[in-house]
Length: 273
Image (cartoon, rainbow, N blue to C red; front, side, top):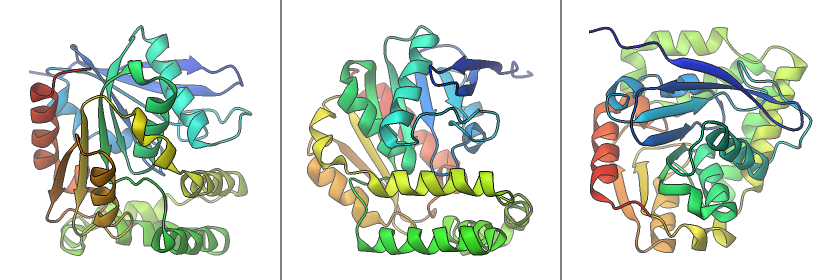
């Protein structure tokens, strides 16, 4: 059976940003928010597994891929308001919201500003606030972005995937090498997003996560190390913590079946708030 084509629409924000939104499937709404890259395409491997039972909503974040930048400051709070606006535009009073990496910071900000809109929160490969390791890593990446943008893209691929997986899927590295941010405008958008994620401090937001919450991580993540997920779990004693032994930072891609199984089990078992 051929899977129906996704519904594609543009959602306009008050500051002029036009957000490119994709919807697949029918059922309870699940909003997927990607990380630093900010693309809806990040979630493509998991959509076929979920769209048979959920309405899967994903989007290109402002200034990324098919979405216009707009004039508002690019902060985690702005990105959270964008996500909430999409749910309102689509007629969803609440949804389960899954954020990966920077997307998990956005979920925390959504929970602080509008906790009643989240039936479940899923925090994947994310953190409460960046420590010395993440600050040093992302400052290094910003320098690469400014001085050698292709090396920035290559290093991102090398850091994000387990070596063995990347060796067996080398076209992923080659694609990253070919699609690096070439223009100053593209580089500026990435740089401001790095500044936004480093400025995030969820320690004042965590109390808002009263809805059923799942924390996901991988023990071999080199970008957001596993101690960040364990710190999140300690701050949220009623949450569930699931750590994969391997998968790298992009474990939704490298460990898709295990990721989907854990997610769907959580959504089925945890009563919505």
